[in-house]
Length: 138
Image (cartoon, rainbow, N blue to C red; front, side, top):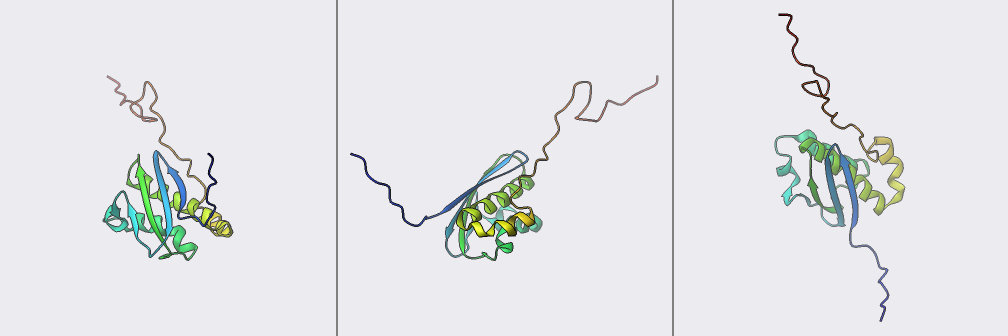
């Protein structure tokens, strides 16, 4: 027996964000403005780095949706800076799923484009990607 799926209003909106080697799965649900990243409040997760906290909230500020959604984020990979960028990207994508008319605002601010900058690979015969070994004459 095949049952028909319910086609009611969505309970949450999802977006996946990426930056460097970090990946963030973002879930937006209509609510009071709770912001949880890896089971910590966002202020506690980015403790001491207000710039990263502001980066994360940028799509919400631009679209004037601060306090309208409860946000739950699962971020992994990379460092804190990469995760902040990935969360920003994920929130922007989730907001598009919520309302497609926000695209112009988010695109102009650069929130929808994935930052392509990655760490360059180490080359053989070198100390790092570009730095060579110290040269001694004698």
